[in-house]
Image (cartoon, rainbow, N blue to C red; front, side, top):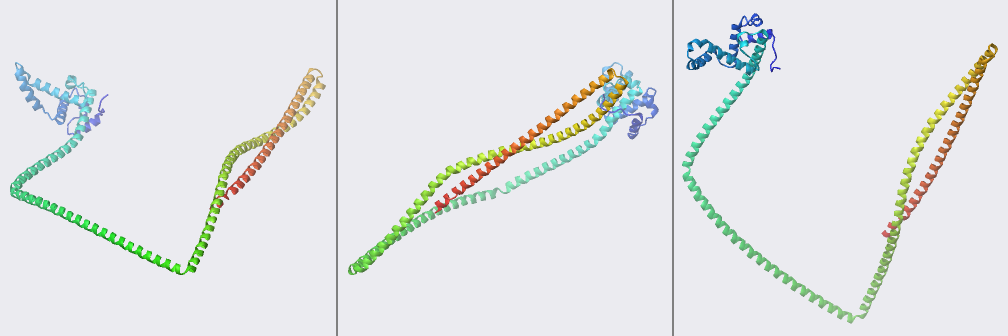
Length: 437
């Protein structure tokens, strides 16, 4: 499994032409004869993908080789060729072809060449796509770096300006410190003045309290004076009563009448309280009746649920009865049809028996008579089955009628319980009126 798709020869030629590489279809079909052209294409692909040329490899590898071998002039081409092969092999491993070897370099086959070129071209296409993204990222990075440099320059300028401003504002800071000290002194003086104002407000409140106490004393003296005046008037009225006893007697009579009226009102209130107590006792008695009525209502509800369940069962039974009646009618129709067919068969059988008796008065007539007797027995069984079905239908009708009678009795009982409950509620409804009275 390779990480790249295998391209066809036409696709490979198209891609190479797009990359401006000169190669023919014949060279792809017979790479061993055109191995030099194939190497040139691989070198060009390596230069495009990796950025290393043959001159770079030749300079680096030959300089190293001359230090390690005895006769470097004999290996100038071989060292360069080997360095080129190793560079191409590294590129092929990067492209996903880990088995690129000397055979692919010196005597390539069409199959291997197709695989190798497919890998390199896929890598080249991917490199072109990623190169656009890489360029965008580089541009974004350069922009960010330029912004950082600008920000640092602005920060340096601001730092220098800050130093200048700090030097220029040294005197201003001293003046600000002096002003701050003056402000603190003024705040202390304002605090002292506030404390003096608070003391003045406290003295004013004390004076107001003293004035209020004086006013209260004056009001007390005025009340005492008024009581003294009322006592004088009362003494004067007593003197007038002594001088006029008839007026006093009339006042006493009026007071006695008002006292009698007050006693009558008290008796009426006592009677109302007694009535209220009687109503409360009746209400207490009615509570027990209401509780019993509630229990009766619950019992009625349970009975109603039972009656609903019985009604559902009755409906199911009626449906089953209807189905049974349909089955009975269908069976009766079948029996009638069977009886008609049997009578027809009996007539044919008798005709056959007579003909057989005339033709063969021996065993055939006896067998036919036996079969006729068997058919008569089947007829008896069918008659018995019909009679049994009729009995079942009558029993079912009787059961349904009994259930109807039970339902009617339950309805009567429920109606009686509802009337008792209504009467009980009507009786208990009078208790609140008595309490209200």
